[in-house]
Image 1 (cartoon, protein in one colour):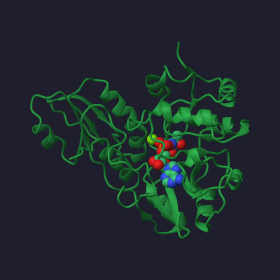
Image 2 (tube, helix red, strand yellow; image 1 turned 135 degrees about the vertical axis):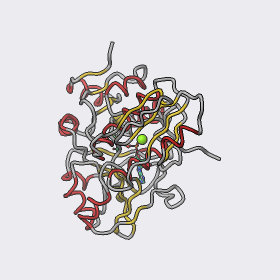
Image 3 (cartoon, helix red, strand yellow; image 1 turned 120 degrees about the vertical axis):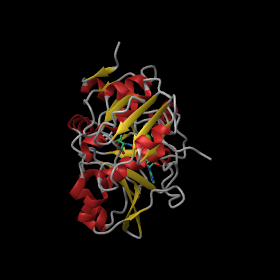
Length: 321
Ligand code: TXA
Ligand code: MG
């Protein structure tokens, strides 16, 4: 029997009883639990096989409850929250004592966001507690953007995926921390840098592990298909490097029409970066299930959401030396 269901009352009952429920957001599906239930939070880490040093994002119903979660909100954080919430932006701020250490991996900051999905906003409004929710995928694997992706990963581990359809934005939230009250981007994501800068001016990006010991989740390899993946600006040249291999291509806006390609997915024939982002993970899930020898992905223009998509493909294709 499928664990995918639209029954929000059932989701409330499970979450109120220390159980996990996968929830839809506009970015990716999250594996959610009550932030105050030690049992639920432990289960999140166990189910994902996520190391305990990697903290979780707290999801709240509106900016009005932010003061119960964080103790200091810099001026630019207020502007960002009021401009972009509900939406695909996570703020990392000083936590209040109420936030359990297991959520923040012992750090004195907490990551928080108001997701922009009607089903999950309704759920959060009805629950007397916020939800901790990392992306609902096993550690390092491709994030889920459809309920079926979560079911495929976790049908033996959780009782319910709350069905909210396909995720509109399709890649994770942009994470913004504060250094001396100035915003710093720790993870590129579904809110473009250009949009953030139009609200608060020029911002620094520190999304590499070396630059940023403060964002423990910034792994070199992440969001990865099981199939070996290569990122390139020149698909046809890369294909020539892999003779007699079963190759899948993830193309930006055009077909490469080569008989050396076994499967091809085009992210957006109209070169729309928003469409490309929304299709990125589903396309990787599809290619990963075709028993290919290799996925060759095309680098996108390095602007707007293209930057965030390239970041994900870079990590998906990372090979340690
Ligand atoms: O779009 C999203 O953000 C999705 C949906 C479900 O909301 N969630 C998500 O969670 O992507 P997760 O756990 O896969 O990624 C959260 C990232 C991790 O890289 C973690 O290290 C970072 O946020 N993070 C959490 N708390 C932090 C903190 N206090 N300081 C720095 N980074 C933090
Ligand atoms: Mg994740």
